[in-house]
Image 1 (cartoon, rainbow, N blue to C red):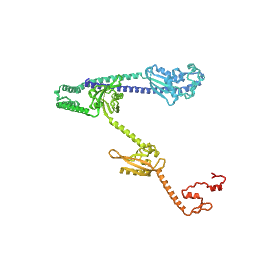
Image 2 (cartoon, one colour; image 1 turned 120 degrees about the horizontal axis):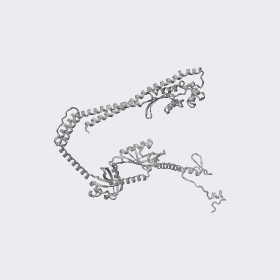
Image 3 (cartoon, rainbow, N blue to C red; image 1 turned 90 degrees about the vertical axis):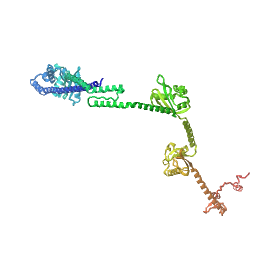
Image 4 (spheres, rainbow, N blue to C red; image 1 turned 135 degrees about the horizontal axis):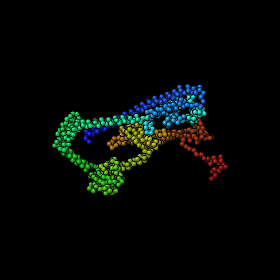
Length: 634
């Protein structure tokens, strides 16, 4: 479809849609307005019916009852034509049914109504029950379909309530006039009480004819607007062809001619008119002239670009050939279920040939199982995941077939192909393994050292300890690593350690000093610190390592030794006094000391020398004092 026809069609479609929407809104609003008018009429109609009821109850019935009483008419007398407001309204509606308003529905509806003609249908009964339950509800309106025809339903409660005079006919059958029972029977509309809602005034106004007229009007408007749209479409189509399509065709024909014949480049196009089409024609003419100017340079530009591409291809080839890491391009092979089972080498570089130990001629277009028969299935699974998901991966893997470690970077190339870059890290892995062995040896060595050992960085933060250190302080290793001196030592001792650490970092070398430490249980121990700095490969100090020698027991032994020496010296000095005059009792052999007290001989020598006594009895004393014991008979 040409642009003019498309434009006119789009405009016509827009007008059609807009008109349809507008007419639907008008149709809806007219029907809503019709319902509003029906509601006003219904209110007026029911107010008139309510007025009739009130008139019968308040003005007609009382004097007639007085007249019956005055005429002494029998108690059985009942005449509904003037005693029942519902009867009066019902018969008035029968007269109305003979007019043009025969389709109008009115009912003074009640539940268990006296006349079956006034019996409430389900809609009226529901409203009546609701009005009895909620006294604030007085009216209800709605649009309801009956037998497929729309009706405006309007209901209001009868403002007249049951009064005491009403109970004569509505309390119990035995109190009601006999003539009433003959007409309506003894089952309906009894058991009422003063103040009960008598009934609901219900009116239904047919809306079918009004709706039909509204729909007819809407259709007529739609037809009229569609006719206008068709006329507008034709006018617009003619105008569009004249002022838009014709100039565009002129520009299009010129463009087609230039595209089919390069010699026409540089020709211009001139059109009548102003505005955007004139600007488009000028832009086309300018483009034609610029294309003509660039035509001569195009071949040179192509040659330049071709040379650049050739140089780039050569650079890429040199890079591919000389790169130190191995590179390969493969195509994945899958089974009927799409599971990876194999791959074929498509391209490899010399570094890859060196790793494999085979030339490219023996690798390219070969299955991996032909090149590496013992390859692990894990390699194929990893590459299959890369191709199927398109997510690149980098992983470290050991090849049993080649007995080497690799860092592999794999990514999807195109279709089922993927590329890999291999970095041989076998030498590095060997160094790492050796380093791990060395670290394991060092850890074992640290744990084997029988004295507490620690090491920290230049900020004073503890980096590690041996088991003896944790045991000595009684604190788990996890609670010490990462702490500084001030975190685990009391302030006086922490200040000493910090000062000594700074001196060691400044001077380097080895440091030894005697101090004290406080364990987690609060005991203070005398120790000797041995510290030395450690540096990195550039000679920069990284921290210090130190050991702690507990000398508490040794110092205690030294103190005890000094005390013993003092005691011996004193004893020796006292022993020397025994060489002088020593007063002794000639009878009991007690010795008098410097203070004038008499002491047993052995006690005096025990206190003033290292002599210790052992008691026995000589032969003479045994015979003298214990002759019966025979101690020396042998």
